[in-house]
Length: 273
Image (cartoon, rainbow, N blue to C red; front, side, top):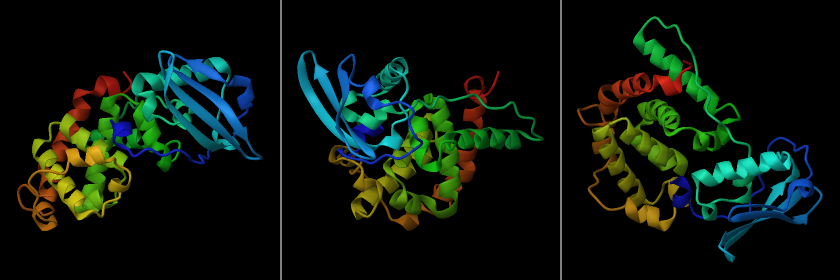
């Protein structure tokens, strides 16, 4: 889980489109073992407290300062549905108030597509999936992908792996990618049956952790890093090359065929019937 792997943070100013609903009209709100309430207001921000319960005992409390424009609040019934939607997918102790309040981003099947070749058809499918993931903005793509079925998210990350790794290899990707992308790409490679590429990517992950210069290390917690730290690792020159087993060879001989087969095998979920 991405939430379990991430270092905790307490305050964020989260800015998106304006909210038509006053927070005081829908908060406080109690849903199952969580409650949300307004605990502070300023000219353009509001502080919301999230309390997580175990029975009658409080087990976690977080406060987050959000811009008024960030809240996108709905009526009380819809807001309760949003919170329940999020609680099904994550441990509330790993969430911030903004994550519980944001609008869901459901996956919409794409297509149909009329393409001259099977390769063009697969490309049309993954391009449409990519556009949908980016519909709320590139920086909001992870929020959408968290709401999608695993198969749709895997299809996105397989496309992303081909696009990113084909240019600069695992070295550039693993040293610059945020934690969500690293976890998403690894999970997608495994789901698509890319055994050799998964092993190569994990070797690169261990090397990136050992070098201590990767972007994802700033976000990942120590337990996640320890889990992925140990094992064989070479050098970037033994990972990123065109010879058999290297990153670029694996993109051509394992990733692209696996992506095509993954999309074809899951067309009933990914495409309009």
